[in-house]
Amino acid sequence: MDTDKSYKLIDEVMNCSKADDWQNAKTEWQIVNYTDVELTEDDEHTCVCGKEGLKHLYTIQNTITKKTLFPIGSVCIKNTGSNYCS
Ligand SMILES: [Zn+2]
Image 1: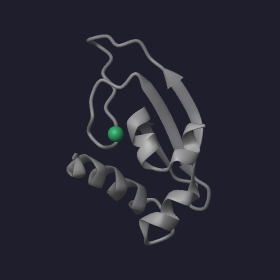
Image 2: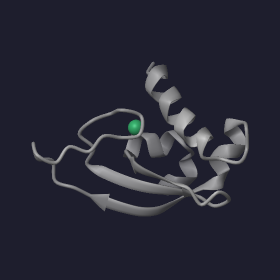
Image 3: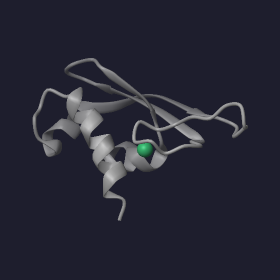
Image 4: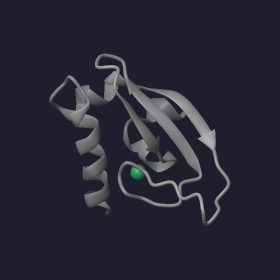
């Protein structure tokens, strides 16, 4: 279980969403950009949830508020809804 990190992500997403419950809020988001990065010591990417050393960086945007969150790791993308991972 990793509820603390999941909560942090949900918190960030909820802050930028119009809906006030998670089930509806997560449907407002879509992936607008994706990059792969090489892992190097000088170039650490930390997920919105606090996880370090990301290799896959997603940018998601809220279709209603137009706010974006970056970077989001691949694990957290799955947490925000499996629709993103097809
Ligand atoms: Zn994360």
